[in-house]
Length: 615
Image (cartoon, rainbow, N blue to C red; front, side, top):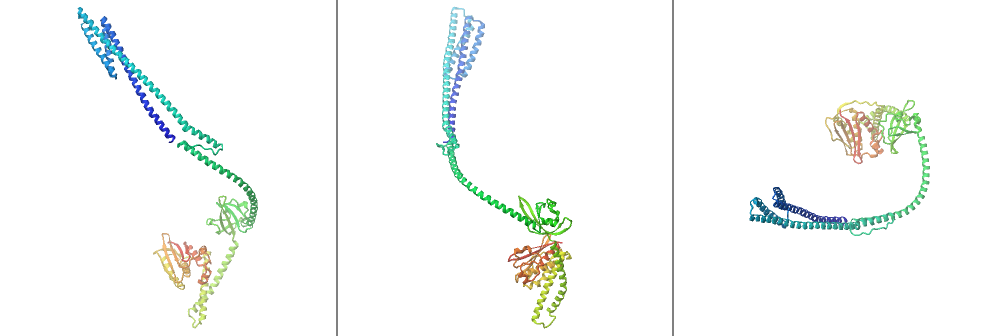
């Protein structure tokens, strides 16, 4: 049983015993008070009876009227005492004695009243003898009252003494019992609580001093025994931990020796690596200083933090003049420059002497000390621009010079292949047909080159009109259907919308659609079908040219709209083409405030999509 349960039972027992003896003590006290009240009433009766007897004897002796008045007052007081005694006397013998006293008092009263009424008429000797007898009867009655009151007093005193002794015995017994309970409580606390706690404290001190094998004997099943078991468990765990720590300490000492040896080796390696890093840093610095391209490090706000010597050569500024300045000081209009690495943009650089020159600029993002930094590479492309201008002028000149004779050759070959000359040998006809196809291909190449030149020079004219998109789609289909038949490919209109009006140049849109449909026909599978879908929302119309070819390889996605770019050289030789059609189409659509993109899945074909704003 737990200590708490034992204490609760012991406390409950004390309460029950205390309640019993308390009730006994209270009852005895009440009885004592009752006896005291009865004794006080009996003493009052005796006092009033003696006073009554004394006054009555004096009156009978002197017959003084004043004494008669006092006797009346005494009688009234005695009768009042009788009335109080009737309400408070509980014992039968006291009630009988009270009745006897009251009866004697009533008889004495009757005798004395008759005596007082007739005392003046008693003159003869016989009558005086009767008076004497009456007085004697009165005195006998009074003596009876006194005797009975005395017996009541004796009994009351005996009962009062007994009640006082009973109260004394009860008090003594209650004190003894409480003292016994106190001794037992001290014994239980000493044995059940204090002694186990003393043992626990003693063993805890021994454990603190390093005696880890110290244990407490466990007896019984209570809170102290549970605490002792917990202490023993803790001591076991501590002993295990100490032993484990001792083993670890030994191993740690051994490891420290090994670490010292490793540290010496590591220090030698660090010194070697430091020397190598220093050499690499010197090499990198030498490479950076010898680079022809300018290199600038920028913070996230495009503030210049360092430059290489090429920057001074390109722009004429020393490091102290531009470090901690915005890069806008030497390069303007950087809003469209991507922060993705490796993408070059053509901009204008500002020299210190106020002149400008063409440059290429690219940013490379990097993290240094938890801060975003950029390595900016700047390349002077003045010479390249000059060469490109010479190339463009040469191409333009050659194209124009070739266009006139090619037109004549094209016309002559067209007449010959159309049957204008009869009886041509079969072999000559095949050669003329091949020459005519190559002339057409060369003419198409020259026209594409001239269009590219005009677009880049901003001289390609557009004649914008509000045009029904469905009319343009149907015209493109009819214009390119014959070309598609040469590759055994069909062209169909799929999804379409009605009454879609766009603001475009119809001839340029037809040229774009011709490029897309010819590509779709060339690269579709034989007997395949090319679909033209049109959709529209509240802002723009969408034209999709969908083929069923092999699709475009993913690695070619970034080059699809570049000039002279084709994804398969063997395919180019087989299908023909200049590699300029998609580049021209992109430039023309963007000039009409639209856009073009594509989606492609290997083995499932491609979809080229044109987006044109609504009129």
